[in-house]
Image: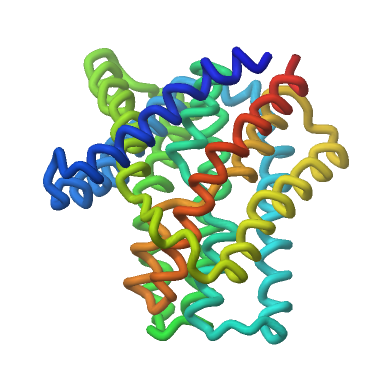
Length: 308
């Protein structure tokens, strides 16, 4: 079991380490990484979601059970943090970084592990998880910035940032192609599949390149709070939810996986653009990613035991 875990997660960890090494050694210009992340986010990852959902057997997936078990823990955690905020020694911008660090998740890690666990079915399950979580997390984080950030957002800007999210568009488009029976016609299907297959290796390289190891020792109290919420509260609530609604097997494993993921590197961009504490966000992203590399094998082992 341990050997299987190492073999399955080895490529994920290796690509992250390679991305960090490439940037640290300046093998590529630092200006390479922002466009690469943009390409992944706006083109490659949506293509993966379109292909995964358009070709999946959605009728066989318990989406109605997955949705509340994914959304419930995120809502409870976010609400709990807002209630606690008045007693935390954090200013508004710092609190937005704690909020993001607690509920935002790294798509590339989630998809890579789901693929290692369940193959093609893992991509479909991960796409469903993203369809549920991406809008919710973006709404909650945007509302957090509107209330606590140093830059005030308009209602129109908030709505626009949600409905134009490329990951949401990719998931919705793939589901529509699936349920209408249109699917992906020959030629286009291969094109979309080729784009999607490039998303994970390039995305994981970008995750590694975004690590700032020198920032890990900063703001440990706030980083620790976000990490406890991320690695203990969310998955704990997810496990309880699966038991309550009777969700088992690969769908339950996907729920637990996505609620256990470290926060995404894109959270730093949001913190910097929308009035958050970008230094605290950088510390949180780096520490959680490094800790997640050590933590996810334990999650992987638990999921293997759950799914047999």
